[in-house]
Image 1: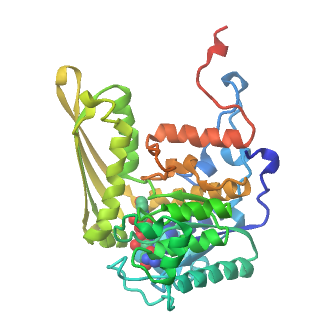
Image 2 (image 1 turned 180 degrees about the horizontal axis):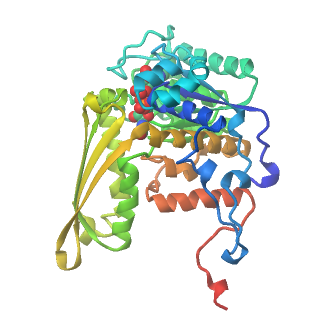
Image 3 (image 1 turned 120 degrees about the horizontal axis):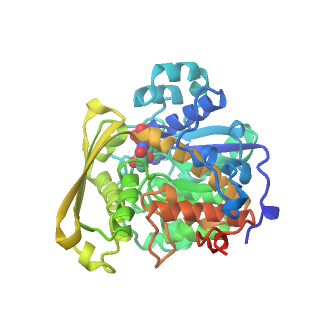
Length: 437
Ligand SMILES: NC(=O)c1ccc[n+]([C@@H]2O[C@H](COP(=O)([O-])OP(=O)(O)OC[C@H]3O[C@@H](n4cnc5c(N)ncnc54)[C@H](O)[C@@H]3O)[C@@H](O)[C@H]2O)c1
């Protein structure tokens, strides 16, 4: 078990690598640089803004998380990326249209210096992207080895002590687990044989794990969520987590649904629809990519509401999720939720949510937190699935045979208790008997 004494200190530079240099990645990088220059506040980031209560309430000990656990400092971060589109981070951010010129222009030189390495990319898996900055090789194994070389070269060129990777690439088509994903041997043989069930995202994950780079998966495609790559992460001692950043509509679902259940209110149906006009929206306009996203979005409510345990409240509720690509909105997504709930004596009620959100503004602090916490996990000797990072994901990875935890507040408690555990502090149970002798 980790302990404060065995956590390696966060010395030297931390390289944060993102497969994908689109809206989310560039908003993350620009934001970190803006914060470093004192121009912005890290709003939305637990590692930068949240406190953690320690001990009894009477002790009044609530340090900032970043003062409590040894995290890498923002000044120590350097950025790298891969993308099939050759645009540097400035050009990509301009294209994404998330940040306004008044925020982007002062960072132009910084962002222009971040140029994407050639990607492992195949249009079969993301049909709507046409990339030219793409690696060539006879086998998927060969392409993955090229990624490993990129990782080593990046580390050496930038003088990094450690690296972490956060997938910020497009959502790939829906792939289900097959025999090639079951064991490390089968997976590696399938790479040699160019098997179609080995998607580019899996090659990044394999390469990162082989290079001992903690890997976080921000998209809903399987990637590291396969028995083979999990076994590899365990074998190599590398922390992994996924899938799919929990940013807008799903984040709100994991706030509202536990509230309904806590009050034992029923649910007849939940209809969610969105309009979105960014490149992600365009990729998700392809039904095969949307199917991957839909599976991730739909999984949330059942696990929180547990209809098998509460059939009178939740059996057979209807859950529909739609995303419509609508270019005029760009990254400024608008979501509508209609929630049909049921109260005392079966009386129906409705909740309407109209969320005008900015996807990448919500995702960027998640990328930062995942990078910093995964680096901490690596230095603390934690390996395999990092369930305490479920807080950040729509479809949290869980050990085989176990249901993932979706309730945001349980996830938050788990995250904070893990930090307390790492630092040798007592768990907080909220029993509170000590205050009433
Ligand atoms: N923004 C959010 O709120 C949010 C929430 C959950 C998940 N996500 C996921 O995060 C990912 C990034 O979102 P975004 O808005 O930045 O999308 P984006 O389209 O702006 O950027 C994705 C980038 O990935 C690149 N890419 C595609 N395949 C690649 C590959 N094989 N290797 C390297 N790069 C590749 C694309 O060229 C593109 O530049 C998407 O998968 C999205 O579904 C985003």
